[in-house]
Image 1 (cartoon, rainbow over the protein chains, first blue to last red):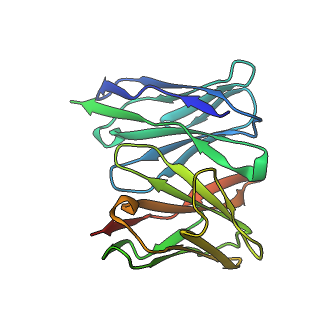
Image 2 (cartoon, chains in turn cyan, blue):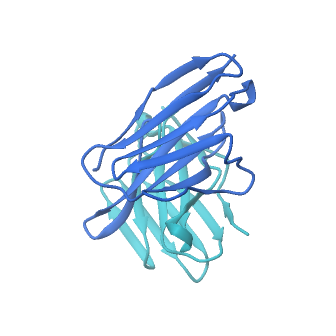
Image 3 (cartoon, rainbow over the protein chains, first blue to last red):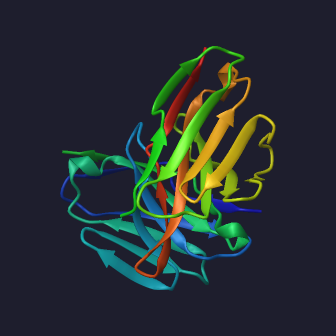
Length: 110
Length: 117
């Protein structure tokens, strides 16, 4: 079966750093995505990890450990506009399907 | 990044009618598109994989006769919700894959909000 776990909700302070964790157990692995989704809108692509390690892109970084089935998304210098849901998703070998976790709702307080 | 459009963005219909949603890749060709459904405060649930020129592959529990998918060209896939009922009210999102700097990435359309009365 497919199982992707991430915390339901998190709160952080403007200007701070927050780490959103994701663990997965899937039948096969072809890469892990992080998406940002604001309420009422479609998800937007943030990052894609297929090899172990940290990938940095501006204020956002994503880390992957395939042996541990673990990833995290790190957001630095938080801004109010970062309040959104963050979706962890795994691509499976089967027809390149992407399976989504339940998402983490991040609230930023001033 | 690549652009995927959906039409309509919102639709309200009466119970029992059928609704067609279009998904287009605007600046690239997509041999595979995906259809997702998202209920309020829930994550995206994959409904089906749409393959150009062949039948769609449906996820377990998704009725293929109720959710008709047609992938007529490399830039267009359509989802038709047949005989819609209030429980079909949801946010429907399509996506298409393309290679971005050597990496296959999935881009999402803006979504279609369906309300069945």
